[in-house]
Amino acid sequence: MAQPIVEVKELSKQYRIGSREPYLVLRDVLARLYKMPLAFLKSIVSAPPKDRFLALKNVSFKVQPGEVIGIIGRNGAGKTTLLKILSRITYPSSGEIILRGRVASLLEVGTGFHPELTGRENIYFNGAILGMKKKEISEKFDEIVAFAEVAQFIDTPVKHYSSGMQLRLAFSVAAYLEPEILLVDEVLAVGDIQFQKKCLGKMDEVAKKGRTVLFVSHNMEAVERLCSRVILLKDGMIVRDGPVSEVIQAYLQIGVQEAGERIWDLPEEAPGDDVVRMHAIRIKDNNGHVRTDFDVRDTITIEQEYRVLKEGYSLTTFLTLSHFKGYDILHSYDNIQDASVGMKRHVGLYRSVCTIPGDFLNDGQITVHAGIVSLPRPQRIRLNDVVRFNVYDAMDPKGARGTMPWPWVTAAVRPRLEWKIDLLPYNFSLRNAADSSEKGE
Image (tube, rainbow, N blue to C red; front, side, top):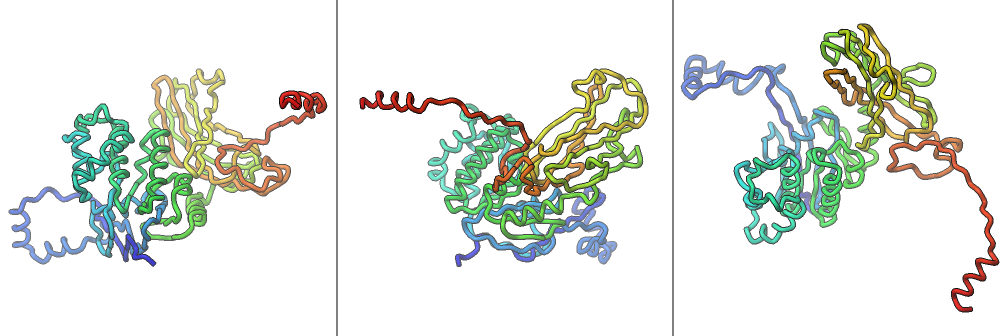
């Protein structure tokens, strides 16, 4: 077997949290060292346990040349920290990393760009950092500019670029300067839909050329499309490393809340403002029971309870449902087509209930985002990833799938619709005669 292009051995990264010390000049440091040498040295060598945070804990894995590895996990799992260490932006607290190739990374908008330099100068600057000669960069220059769609502004300092322009150029530079190892973080989520598709297509092309890609994303559809293997991080540790579908399923199980409800008992701690605050969000079945697992045929109700704290405001609650693969399924307001949208709400506790019929959602894990809009300010309160629930397919012939053996892989919804099939009159003898005359028979 070929030698691994990336080796990570017992990697750990520790941060010190808490209040920062005031700025010290060299004179202050020497004075402390002279007055209390033991105490000073102890403060440098070790911090109290409560002031430490382990972002990564003994992480070990190997990547072979040409592999496309997905790195997934919830926010705070250590994904970005891992890529920053591999990019040499930060150093590990312990452990070892062996990289056998040039590394290019795209971790955030404008990574590696100098704001005072033009787009043209930054392309050559980044290429030089990767160890490329000017001739090599020049051969790729036109392709980089064309992909990034910034030809008109290529001689403008990048500090005047929008975030989208910086992102396009940064990705183009990272992809076209042909590093052996490409590190890509969730930064692609910043771009528009067309650009995301374009980037994913380019990454697919890069992978097929045999280069190694480490791809961090919350978009499971992109991970499934690009990756041959997935690493799942939780609390800074690797909990699964293996085939894409198996690891994604393990990730989804971590993400599901044990109870299908979220309650804020204390108004002062609930999301909101001085006009309205959220009280609870619940996922229920048709019998009023809180659940997190539903058959595709089940009716699902989503309740939002909120406290109105001030008179004189019109309030509308809303829901957004997202599929685990990263795309939104639907967005709905509680009274957008109701005359009550213009009515003022009195102080009190309210409940809005949204009903989703059976045989509507596709199977998979669904994330619920919720919020409240208050007028006439207007003010919008949005809560992302409040609760989640699973929709599974029992393969009932009477359901939307019927007896079809394959899933609706890319569909957001799969409603059971009414179809009508008619046998139409058709004169085969006349049709056959017409075909014969056309052929000159």
